[in-house]
Image (cartoon, rainbow, N blue to C red; front, side):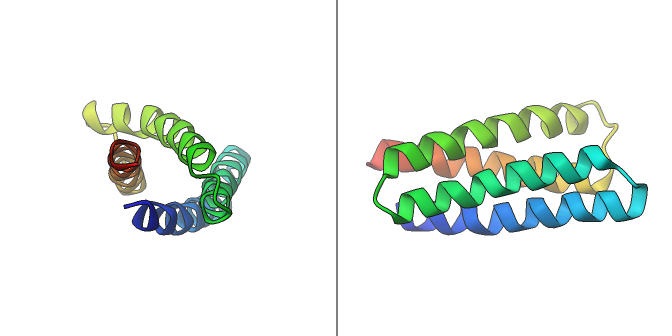
Length: 107
């Protein structure tokens, strides 16, 4: 399960960075660029740390970033004020949380 999680972090990180760039290009939102870039890089770092054999540290970092992203996007979706990108990020964040918790449980 750790292998699936580290790949998920890598893909999720890349998608998060791309989302931040798209937000900047479309809406000139520096906040999107900064938040998407920083959280995306942290997710990629989580994957790299796991690949380096520091599984607990990588999973903890991935968990923290996933909780932060879920906390940002899931409430928007629940309140029905969510554009499509927020729905996608809520789903990806929830999946990341689930994968991380399963990885901790099976470790």
